[in-house]
Image 1 (cartoon, helix red, strand yellow):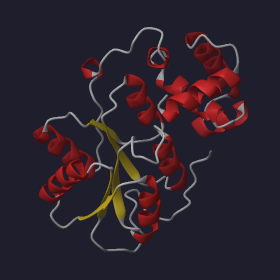
Image 2 (tube, one colour; image 1 turned 90 degrees about the vertical axis):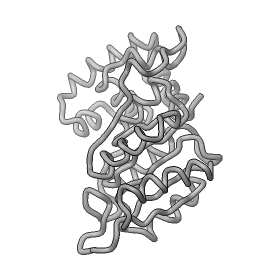
Image 3 (cartoon, one colour; image 1 turned 180 degrees about the horizontal axis):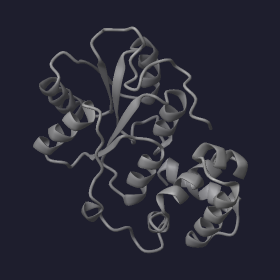
Image 4 (cartoon, helix red, strand yellow; image 1 turned 135 degrees about the vertical axis):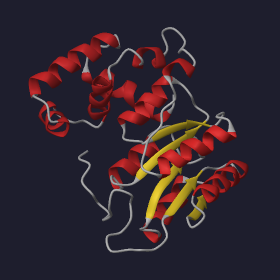
Length: 228
């Protein structure tokens, strides 16, 4: 799954040569949260155009209509979304678009997987209002933000979360590529590392996950992305 640009734009998702007001899309099925996020955004950047959608289908429809989109605030648990699949879709189809996850799911595996998939931030919905505004200001100015590890609840023993938590960031990226059916050579090219290094990482991640094959690893990664 090479992250080649499929929709033209610059690093903020803005069309080249466009001077229109930047757009922020809020994708969440909870109206009250959308209103709260909108108010925060309008305080930070009064000129921003804020679009609200309540499903992945609506988000897919909105993006081509708003080529100046700078940022998407993405909920992972909308009715037509399975876990991290929406983020994976956006990173594949709109690789230059900045995506910040806003989620009630605070498991470490979700946070780390979102980062591995290319999100620029992960904002728990339980974050206090003032801190949320500070985080959004940082993200909208081109920065990123991730919850400090010691603020995340520890995963239950023997859970998928606990197993995923054993992986290094690079091993987690490789696990997600395995799920997509990528060959070692393809993974090496994507990550700009040697194929032998990929093999070493795969051996390590299978051991850490208590798995015997790539197929088992792909199934586990699929369950993770689906939120199971």
